[in-house]
Image (tube, rainbow, N blue to C red; front, side, top):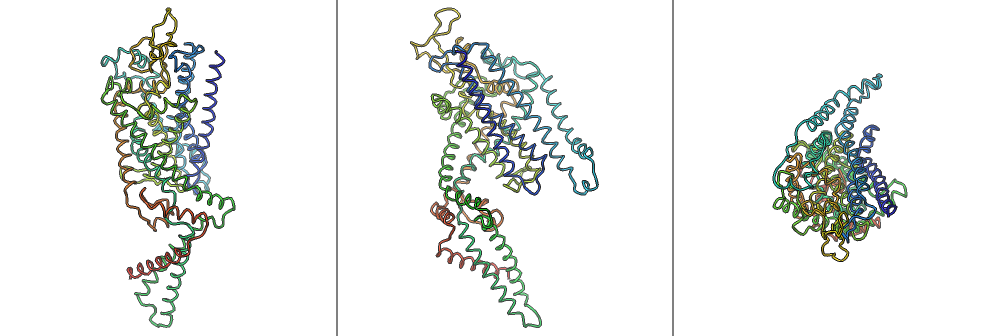
Length: 600
């Protein structure tokens, strides 16, 4: 039976390798999509890609962790499989622990040292100095002297975690349980690492509450609003007509004043200036619509634009599915949060660890049921993590990098400065650590802790033998942290991630309490942003189209669906409706004349 167990665990690791390769592709695409091409830096690009790759590899290790511990036991019989000897199980856990510690340490070093150095290295670049022959060492030292402050911060964090005694000792009856005793059995090195990572998770949780909470609502909405309110061909036709009318009015004004010795009257001069400014806006808008239609581009790009327009209805359906998923996750987190606050066996003394779920938790139930069809549950867990990651990116892009209410950097596709890209990467690194906590502690706590493991509560017939429930399936119980049955200790193996997170919250209860209550702030931010995007009155802002086409439109979910499908069909055909073109042209010209008159 040992080769069967080796084959199963090897397949899980191979699947993880494939996922990490896909994560590298995601990191590359994400970096090149958002950064500004004109200010692209090799150092910044490399550090950003590697950092995103490392944090995705870290968060995608959770499904592997769950899969490996679940593979060691039989769900039906509640017993360890024949190949899952204590030595083999310890070997699996040791491998997972080494990979986890290596990735967490790498994330911390990238976040606190590598990315700050890349930031200051880019800031030290000066064209004039480079032309005058500034040495590599001078630029390196200029960046390094600022990075030393971050290195000192890392050293201080490690020393605090190494020497400061843990604040959680014997608080309450929960410390009599073997599970909690094992959590505190950590050496000083582990204690230092748990403090450092725990502090980063807490900082990331504060960012996660704002950015991921908003992004979880806005990400599905971005799919639903993917169809423009006005098609590119129709906007192009309207703009061309308005531009022709504008230039004709300018010509008439100039001809009317051509024979006057005193020149053009002030009123006509102001109107002409307004028309010239409007002409620049119309020319810019015409260029945007031409790019949207693929004019002057290759046949492949034009075909891609047509394909995007063709699949917009599917994006709408996909957005609705993602919105339902977001609501399901929100409800599940709310139920778990209330359950933890009311029924935690140790409350704030251990970060509100929940012994077992006392209410129906939809997401946790879905994972447990899907585990019956291997490997559906692991694929769903990976997709859920990527959903949180995509929501975080959407939240950062929508809110931007701010200091309180002041926006410091704007995050937009193809327009993100290198400094903003590095800061956003640090924010994503911290947020991903917080997502690990949220998924394992609130979204699917029971599944993330023990996977599909169960134990047989029937007493063994012989000393040292495993309990047998083949004739008593009703005595098979799900594994739980609060279980007092001595038989569960030999069968139930918690995941390395849940053990690590619970060790942080038990050893440093203040961090655990902040992480827990911040989840309610996350739920509140999601609710406010979701209701705002749902009921906000739709509008079409032409000035925003001039800058960012339709991307910055503030249209709600209640916008006219028929109008959106009309625009989609016109984009597929590449033509505007004849009646619409004329009416829109007249309306645009009327608006132009009215704006010119108001300025006079």
